[in-house]
Length: 338
Image (spheres, rainbow, N blue to C red):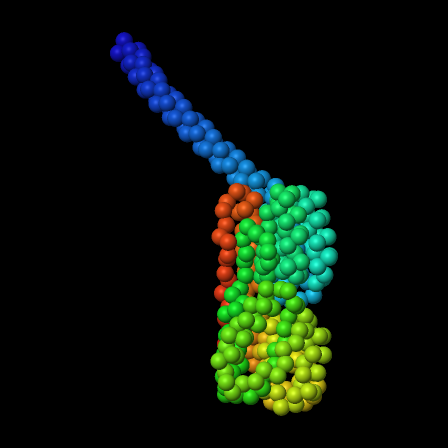
């Protein structure tokens, strides 16, 4: 009898233990399931928010009108703009105006027809661009200007270097290089652009206090290397004892380098440019140019597009966004090349 009852009691105990264990496991299973469901719901919500944000950016289209892509400075500006557009996942349409104000106007009209959200404009001519800006804004499309401003029209924001300061830095170094006395010439950029006026203003601000320095010529070469060569050659032939040339951009400065080299007087002439393009930095490093003013065209392009995106999303912008400039000479050029 004892042998018969022991197994029954043991079986009963085992049955109770199994029921308790099953109940415990059942509770854990429900809790685990609920936790997983909550996590999945959270992840789905996060994914949805991210997708919505990405879709919001992707729906933005920006038109970028550049004065000319024949100038390395503006090529770099476009690269900065495209980098910002790629990072944000928005569409960027580029118009190369080829230094033609009418081509620029046509390109902006195309942007209006396509219904872009914002236009980023680097004008060929600061005054001629007014009509295009007004047409865009009449169509409900706001404008951000980069590097060069538009005179006589209100835009949402202007992103540029301090051109007056750059002209002053270049001219101070020029005077230092000729020991504060002698004859100098200036190669001017495209008439009507704020870059030409502002860099020229910086040049004049410093030069007007230099009593022992004579300005013998100040002529436009339209920001062109070929014209810089021709104009500089004419100036040098008319003024064989010229001490220095300030060119309002590097392309004209490099043209002046070629002209002076052709005349065999490069070693006796101080030449300073503006923009710090790759070719100019190499010329400074090689001792063929004495200096240039470093802008940050990549940053100007990048900030211009980021500003346009913020504008398309309803954000307010600062009227002016300055980008730093710095004098580049043989003493620090290696850092810029790196």
